[in-house]
Length: 135
Image 1 (cartoon, one colour):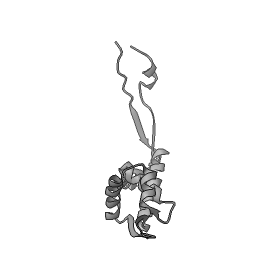
Image 2: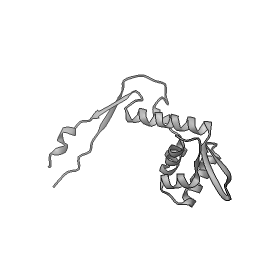
Image 3: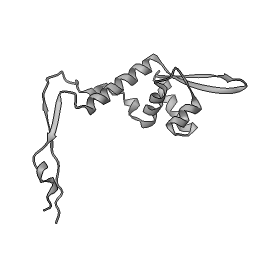
Image 4: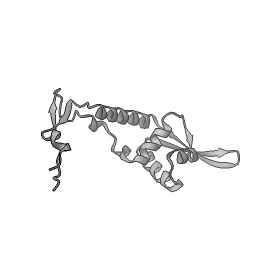
């Protein structure tokens, strides 16, 4: 009979910091949606982008993109610009200054978490060496 081995991860604070100093506290909850994060990432390198271009980059339908853009616009992070290109109506999307700052903070927090920042180090816990053995 094979037993299920539980991996125990222990964390030891290596650098004392104030409560709430873990980088996860800098994450923007609105960007936890993969689609919203993808939209903001698509807009970050450009001054503005046409709605259809962003839709195709993010690989979602018009209605999904519209809903997610509305949430970002309500937060003040994305501006929606309506206009015309020749005779055709067009919609462009652009990150606001606040949206760009939030996105950069969010990315920095993700990087810090991925790199093990936050004053914590994790390593294999007791029993990790037993993991490969059946029993």
